[in-house]
Length: 237
Image 1: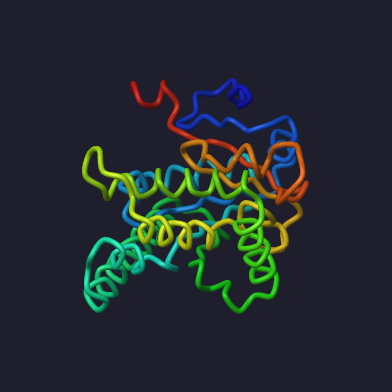
Image 2: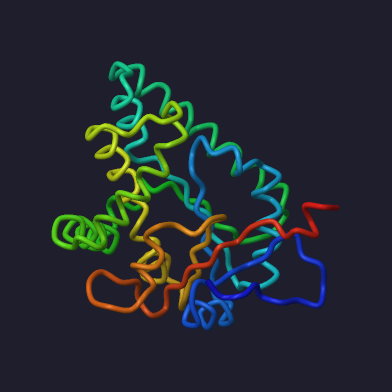
């Protein structure tokens, strides 16, 4: 991971573009995509407002995308009856959407887009990218290993200490993650922007695969990735 972007002014967040290529995409300043996970307490309304305000200082436009696909499958994989899983998932997604709405309103920035993943299901480019993800999952051992590592990390918060995910739980986690991956591959095509940085507060196991050298499924040149997290100075304030 490259060094934090430097600024002469104190900043509430610090950014770590994954590679020199990602840094160049960042420096273009076209677009920032903020991915929001349902049920993740990190994404409070206040945090979202801060991220939006901070993002608009460096980028011409900002969009937020939140996951609302395959959430119920995870509850089912953990033993919830189908109807109860559906209700819990719907509640979790609705809570996330409302939190995003409050945060964007609090940020007071014009032109910030908010999208559910399900909004893109009719989109031809989203479906094309999702098919590429599915093919890589079947045919590319490196990709599958990283994707499974990402799924296990995601599922860890729902497991008891020392417990490992079952095959059914891992499959549910993979479906959830793979629905998000088109936005790590080609957000510019999906949102009609010249270039884009996808950001999250930790580096994901798939980051070195999608944004590294080599063959197989890789992000488009206009797509970058950065870890964006609260700066130590802001945390100490």
